[in-house]
Length: 450
Image (cartoon, rainbow, N blue to C red):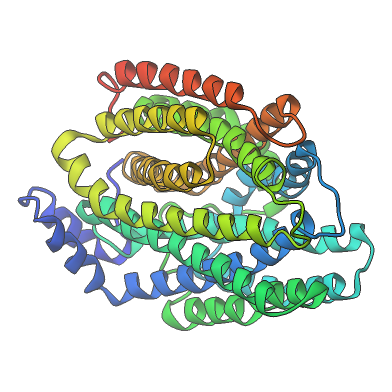
């Protein structure tokens, strides 16, 4: 099925055979559209809020000087928050392919704004962990609707030939906004003290979630972002959930017919699993091996984490600049293969050095690879999957994306010493990336992502 972009179907058809413009022309074209800018604003406000909320949450749990954390605790904490959120993923598509995506974005962010308030209060008062964890789980789970909804809506606000640039621009801006939120939460926790600082950093997410909801509600008509009327599912939601359970086989079959998209999702899943190992190693080694025990409040650790976060945002930004041009010139399959090779070589350097600045530099390069791969995968799903399946397959992709990360964290935590110093594990990760590089380099020549 030919992908169309809602009200702009005619424009897509008329321009399908047009000469590909210069990359700057793509950027001008997408930014000229008011609807794209509005969706971008919805994403930006939401992901800045995510950064504040999750940053305050992480510092209060992992870097609270009153708590003692072992490496396995990182994996358990992430699993508790991500696994339920991810298992629900395919069912989000039921709603994205059936209900107004504008309404889903607005209502989901409004609910999160309301839920952040009691979460921050529980952090401040030091309430029971089960209450704190339940509120946090709800806020993060609802994010599933927002991220999948933003991705599924994108083809309705840009023409087909601009999708790769739009994905590069939107997802990278989202990552940078998330990093800005993390940076803001770090500043708050350094300026304020104790539980008040953690609660304030998390609580600042509430007005930003509300702003995101307002932008989506005011900028779009109810069905503007899809699903398209001729592809929209109807009927009872409960029946649809049952049918979705049965229909996952059909969804996989639909994806399998688009081998390029399926293989690009697979390589991203492998990358995320290995990235999970890297994450738990980084957290553990900064909190353990590199931490100066004479400093009570982990100021040194948080300083290096701030540097890592900043390097990650720079890497995401650079990836947004170069990925659209390179994929058009070199091809998306070759680009992803090169990115996996880049990560493998980078991690080998970190394993040899085991030095704080090496982790910062490596984060910049790894984020170039992560963001570039995500841009390719998103574009592959948007351009090769029919709109009637797009919502559920984006949700499925998010599920695989997150569960792979959690699996990687558990694998790394099960092997790590308590202080996190484990260059041998990093060399094992290098071997994993080399295998992925060779496999995808061969398979992508026969099955291009798009």
